[in-house]
Every structure is written in structure tokens, then in C-alpha cells.
Image (cartoon, rainbow, N blue to C red):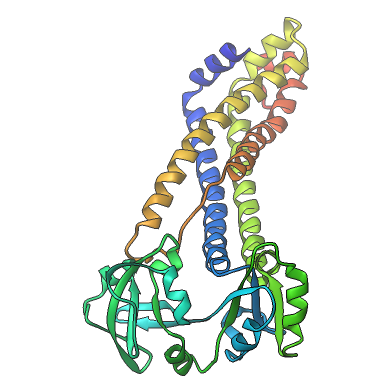
Length: 360
């Protein structure tokens, strides 16, 4: 069955190539859309999880960029039982030189250890620590202007998180003056075997203006992540439908050109189910080869995206084994479903009409 399917594909090289390219385009689109959205979520999640297992934000806000938490709560939180360390961070963004937007992080002193120095030192007052990606693109490597203030570059750090590697780190007090806030969020590291739920209840008692969640719960329910995932799924479905329509169109033409072949098979007693199965087998083979090609093309594309100096590491993609398996199944379904209608149309047509060459 497979050998005959391969012969049929070779006999229709042009149509096979068109279906193959149509599938590759659709599969690569789904790969890139899904992996980039997963990469964005993974990078931001890593930042949130790096400093502990409890996150404090302002109550009733839609995004952490709008959050403003009183940094003085740190002193009260540290007095609670089973608290190991509390840090604070401000999220902001600003144009830097010719770059239209750069991530700015204002952090407390105890969070500097998260940034691996590769040059010079951590920032003091009126100084900034810059990520490796952005440092390489700066014209002025001595000073950097953020909003209306100029900071001396104290050092360069490297991070596996693209958002950070392309960002600038300031002392939280100076970032607060720029963005007019105390802290975007507080991140709390508890002692081992602590009762997280009980600690969360105790922290909530400290202020009515805060929302307190475990880091995992925050990531799972963060509205922006849900929006990114939903948008990714919608665009992926559109790419799937476009690929499906392309396959149906090309398969219809291919099957129509092979009408005499199917008519002879029907005339010599080959059952309809076998003819349909043969066409579906051909589509399955194309689907497998298309997925393999798209998998490697996607990896290469993501590599260049990740290392592009223009993107500063802000765009990164992750192709997990689960994502690869899901897209493999999607690819096969796209190929097979696209072949069903043309196959049914050919197999159910009277063999005499097919042999005579009338249109299907």
C-alpha cells in the first residue's frame, strides 16, 4: 500500500510538490505562532518565579505594569513567620538611543544577585546595569539616558531570559522616581516546608490595597498570558484552515486528473474504501514529510529570531515535545481531512463516466 502510494506521488510530482509546500507553509506558521507565544510567557514567568513563591501586586489591576504596591510593606512582611526574603521590582519601558522601546527594571539591592555580571559592577546611585544584548547595540557605552535622566553604565550582565538580557536595571528608588510608583510587585521567598496558603492569608491582612497569590497561581491566572494564548490559538486555527483549503483545492485537481486510474480500479472490482484509503495514505506520507521539513525550518527561523540584534532578545520561541506532538497530529489531520472530500468524490463516481473522461 505504501509503495503504491509513493509511486502515485512520484507520478504526480507537480501536485505533490504544491501540496507539500502548502502544508509546510501552514505548519511553519502554526509552529512559529505557538512557540513564540509560549516563549514570551515562559520568559516573563521565569522573571516572576526567580525570587520566590509568593507575589504581591496592587488589587484589582489588569496588568503588572499598572500595579503600584507600597514598598514599605517589605518590612512588615519580613516580620512574619517563615519568610526568608522579600524583594521588590518595578516594570517600565523607555526609548533608549535609536531603540524605540527598552524594558526597564527597578529592583531592590537583594535582587541584583539574579543578574550575572560579565563586566564591571552592580549599580550605585545614578548608575545603571545593562543587558548584554542592548549593550552591544549602544553607541554611547559610558552613559545611558532613560526618560529625562542620564545614568552612568556601571556594568553589563547576561541573562538567559530575553526580556532581561535586552533590558536596563536600576535601583528601585530611581526607577520609582521615573515611573512615579513605589513598586510594581513584591516577591516573597518563604522557608522550606512553609504553609504557603497561611502565609498568603497573613500578608493579605497587612493591606486592603493588595492582591496576594502564589507564583504558580499568579502565572496560571495572569490575564495577559490568557490573551496571548487565545490570540495564538485563533491565528493558528486560521493558518490551519488556509492550509486545509489549499490541500482540498490541489487534491481536487490531482484526483480529477487521475479519474481514468480510479475508474479502471473500480471496473476491476477494487472497493471504494480501498481507493479512499490509498488517497489518504498518500496524504499521510506528504503530511509526515511536511512536518519534518517544517520542524527544522521552524527551529532555524527561531534561532535567527532569538539572535537578531533588532529584536534585542525580546522575541524567543520554545518548541516543547508536547507542542511538537500536537502540531504533528494537526499536520496529519490537515493532510488527511483535505484529501477526504476529493477521494470520496472520485471513489463514488460511476467507473464508466470516469473512464470516459467526463468531469468529476
